[in-house]
Image 1 (cartoon, helix red, strand yellow):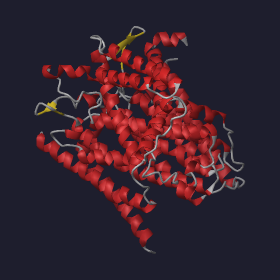
Image 2 (tube, chains in turn yellow, green; image 1 turned 180 degrees about the vertical axis):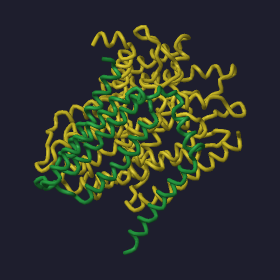
Image 3 (cartoon, rainbow over the protein chains, first blue to last red; image 1 turned 45 degrees about the vertical axis):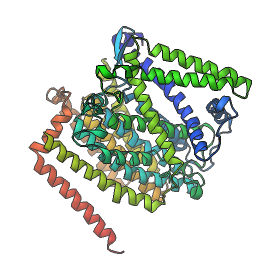
Image 4 (cartoon, chains in turn green, blue; image 1 turned 60 degrees about the horizontal axis):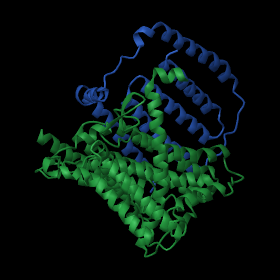
Length: 407
Length: 164
């Protein structure tokens, strides 16, 4: 084993990157559930999680522990192997796509190797992500089938049909971006979007001067919401008709795995949206001397959040909150100062802008979920085949025309 | 043994095991899952040949779309386990020797022709090359095939709608 690592140092580097990324992803998807519950609560005029830790910040930890200690039941007539396989398949596929996402342009040295902020920078990055998400449907479909329960089966069937239908629109909507950038490599897709139009408008694919991908982004976003089985397209769960759909029979950590898979694929889809349409890690400001100060914006934003937390923390109602919130705030301020350091500021910029864009997209995602009611099943299929697909194809045709004319 | 060769044998073993399991399994869903394993292993083999595009398409089209439809239909019909029939005698006496013969012939051909069958190290622009072939050199056969598939789809709709 040591010999293998010595011969191929990239293995060790990748392993370290995978461990760090996995830790970050699992933490962020745990806090995404907190974020979702908070946003949902505020949309509905409630407070949301507030009891476990200040502002409910320890809620994800409590949820995780609760899932671990619940009884894990298996229905007597279930197909045991497939029943066990489904949640693992769901979660592992949803998590593994993050390995292909590039988080920034910078490079760093580790174990004597210079490496970039992506675990696997492959030529077919985009296709590989689609390949992995296209197998993701099996998790839900097989969970529904193996539970041997009519509600589960209906949920699984719906999900299979829905995923196959919306995958077409998803892939078609991305074709417009591919026509503009001419590569499947995600890092190069981002690089192709650098520069500005008229000196101030970023040349993102969404606002591309050749063919703005507004239609494409619309199709992508709708199809992506459907692909991740989220409201208004969560027909696979549809608790008003199907109890809990495909995961009716799942309890304990197996249920938690489906839950985590949903949030992990939300994160992936948002990363992809940021890369394809919003210039990935690129700053929204022009890279000219007049705008040099914008390099410090991420650090300033972080510092503002930190200071806000400190101020809010001192006035918090519980003693635990009066200690914890200022400490977290001070830590954020310290990170902000580190990020503003001359050596770090350029390196931190990329990931910071990328994360900011992802956060905005995730917010829209959550916002949509708590605003729109669920579609009926025939409406869902109608939207997918009769509206979204033609619009996506029209986008491909228009974009190709524009690309040919501009050549 | 080089890393490539190790990976090849692992993937090949998975593919063969999946194929055997596909036949041996009694439940259609288990058979379908075995077929997905075979396809994933094949995609891995394509990756090993540096045919990245083909590997991704293999997964997206076969494992991700066609097999989903298989699983969908099996689930929709709620097909139960197969009933075993004792192997028919003609199938046994004709099939087993033929299968062995086919295997031997393939092994012989591969062993003899190995030098000429080594994969060309493909350039990074393999995808570009493939699309050039498809959309420039062979654009007519490509479009003809598309129309053929379109006709098949229309035919399916016409046949299905006849009773409605």
